[in-house]
Image 1: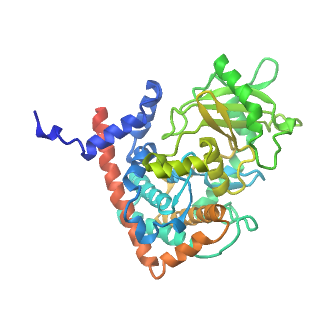
Image 2 (image 1 turned 60 degrees about the vertical axis):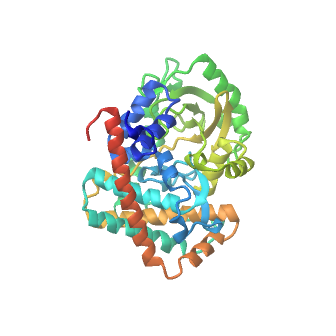
Image 3 (image 1 turned 90 degrees about the vertical axis):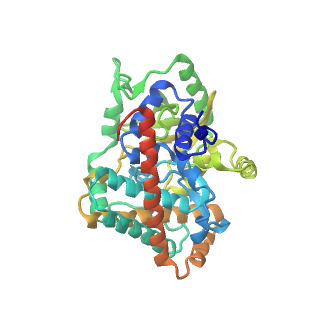
Length: 438
């Protein structure tokens, strides 16, 4: 017998065990599909293992260097990476760019989001192999400097002064991207992708699509029964009492969406829009909400407080969305089904990710990194104000950062590059366990 078997607390064992535990309840088909996405690159692996990030960094002593106290906490996206930014439309029809996923939304130290975003930048650039290490490091530092500058400037109440990012106030490749999305993507095009017309001329979901499937009678009945109560959870400008907007036309099961959440039960509901046109129907995205990755690392006292604050995961998701997002979804709410609480939101007709693989010039990468830093900071400031109803977050940051601005960006780059190396090693461990070669 090998003495090595006495102590299993090694990194390789931890990685394989943690991934197996996190995915143990997934049906084999979805687990295989998720692992396939994770095996495509180290960046894909990062996307599928947010639980590892939180396990590695939760209560990391380095948080105290530039934060780490109650006042430097804000509402977090909780799974910040480049492809959780995206273009989408707000209720007023503007195509904006920002976070579009709040499944892991939680209150915590701002650095969790900032670190994970910077790490994803390093891994994404390495994946596409389009920039040298010095260019990537410069971009990460630009991201950090822009984040800090935005936090420490322009103190404002988000309820009276809206700041969001559109083609009108972005620059370079991001501006071009948003112009293209606004021109190319439409509600009509989205409906053409996901729906068809039946023999009576009624618009229905295209259930022959590989990403959609019909519901069982039980699933259909559950959704129908839960829908009236969902309408009571709405807090936007559209009243849940207005029957014009809440006629269900069809339902389908959504398959193979995302990476980290791949296999999570999810449905699409097609509801009536403005009855005057055939091309403005609404698709509602109904997704089961699990506890965020951060919750798994909380101690008993923290979990007790968590459950006092949030009545269930649908409530937490909605609070995070409303705190961070600019013009949050007017259809945002939740519904309770037999197997858990599901978030409900509109599927945006302008949903699109920025194609980072098309970046070629170091100048474009740096410019984009600055804007990622500005956007993250703006959303953290919005979240801080929602949390405290004051400028407590900005004040705490100003005090913590006194004369440390330069150190801050260098430190961020060190964290990003060091952990990117760790992710690369973990990724190779994962591939070896699957019997795949790098």
